Image (cartoon, rainbow, N blue to C red; front, side, top):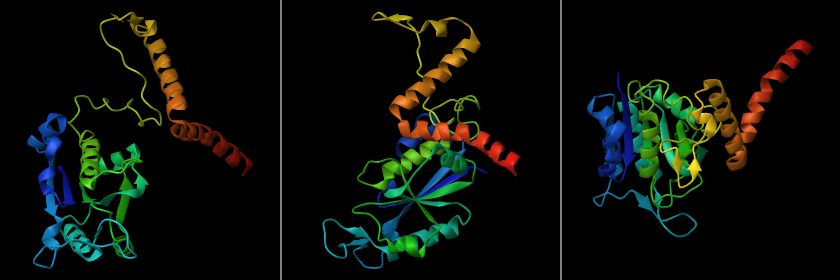
Length: 246
């Protein structure tokens, strides 16, 4: 069974978009994954196919209506009742590589793309199974770009998409760290040399250097990741101490 994505969107023409080229595009042609864009306006009930209205309490912009979105979500659940539904919103929980791996290991995902000022909050109150996720501390013009990012992250993990099964094992976030820096020929570029250890042929020293650089770069660039990484390393020891006390 291939991975199938449903995308609830006001712009179905955006899919597969860039996912139709490179690794994802080849995987699409090979049937490793597929996608079905679903137009949210198809669930509107008036002749103008209205999907939004002015914010309660006043303010700029428009808000996507809960009744229209719920109808689209409910229909998507009928089509794929066993897959998670994710709503793209900056108010959501930041997505993680661990969650991406969980999604990629399943049969697919349904993605709800926001627009305008966002969703009527009652949608999430009435449909608590919708998982609100954010692709980072940024605001996009719509959830479609976020959906493309999420799907790309999933597709590259599907069996047979990357050349080697271990290709993604040492990438950023897989081990809780940023990935170590990479170099390639020429050895001397503008007076800057590839680090000597990487030219040594000593695999043990290379592995140690890469781990050291990954830890150092994570500590300097992403102290939030570094803090979680340190906590994860300390936790097993404390667990053992607790068991000994018991």
